[in-house]
Amino acid sequence: MTHQPIAITQGDPAGIGPEIIAKAFRDAPEALRGCFVVGDVACLRRASALIGSPVALPLPVALLDRAADAWQLPAHCIGVLQVLPEAALAPLGRISAEAGRAAALCVEWAARAALRGEIAALVTAPLHKEALAAAGVSFPGHTELLQAQAAAHLGLPVSQVPVRMMLANDELRTVLVSIHMSLRQAIETVTFDNVLQTLQITHRSVQAMLGRAPRIAVAGLNPHAGEGGLFGSEEQSIIAPAVAAARAQGLDVSGPFAPDTVFMRARARAHAPAEFDVVVAMYHDQGLIPVKYLGVEQGVNVTLGLPLVRTSPDHGTAFDIAGTGRADASSLIAAIHMARRLCP
Image: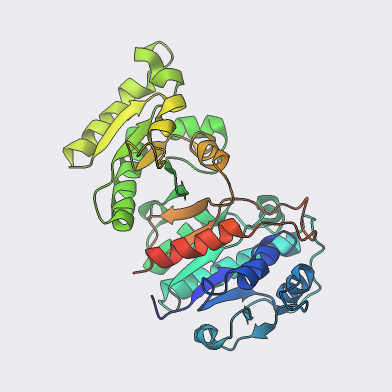
């Protein structure tokens, strides 16, 4: 186990992020040893009061002077490093610029700490993309924000720090060629260079997780993977050449396969071992729907290609249930376990 602490960013304070963090400290104290929250003490105290505890009192919330103090906290105690200016609490369940700005500041602080080597990993609670935009944040989500922070730290242009999103649970892993953009833009992003780069990043990252070269399946873009050019030519002109180039580099890559069946072939079950370790999908919904359908409560989002470890639950801010006490912390706890496994 790493001796450096793991930071959990509080997410959008108007959403379920603080609540699932409090529930994780309540329900999985062993998994939360050495973890602390980057955010606002008042926000976490509100969440603690909301969920209750085994002794019918709110979980204690401690203000930390430094990240390393997280290891000294007793079980069930939520340690918070106050990185936000004191302000009125954001109303639960509402989009606001103030909440978006607070969420972004927490992620930026944690990213810089990870890049400086002060924390072992960061686990990010959900933020809201409309709130980010209202706050004037120029990034559509965590992945792009973290990519920009890493590029600045390395003194490189963003284009030279390529990253990819992987969503994983116990049954299936998928990596995306494109992330947060319109479907029309995503199709235009399916180029030889982007597909090959995705395969290279996937190989390096998943190999580090498994301790062996991964078996990578590639989904086609079109129905039936183009059916020999009847339903589109991208498979023949772009994806298959990228697969061939990756294989020439020694990567275990197959495809492109029909998108409506390849995920079933990569699903690991007790009675049917997976044929592949990971599927590279061409766009966001193609890759994420299969994983989320299997259960968001165990899904984990991992950013590949960064010079730091970052994981998150695979759900959003759930404004519709924020403040009700009904949010499920399982995906966050799974993200914390994943972060520990990925720590060097």
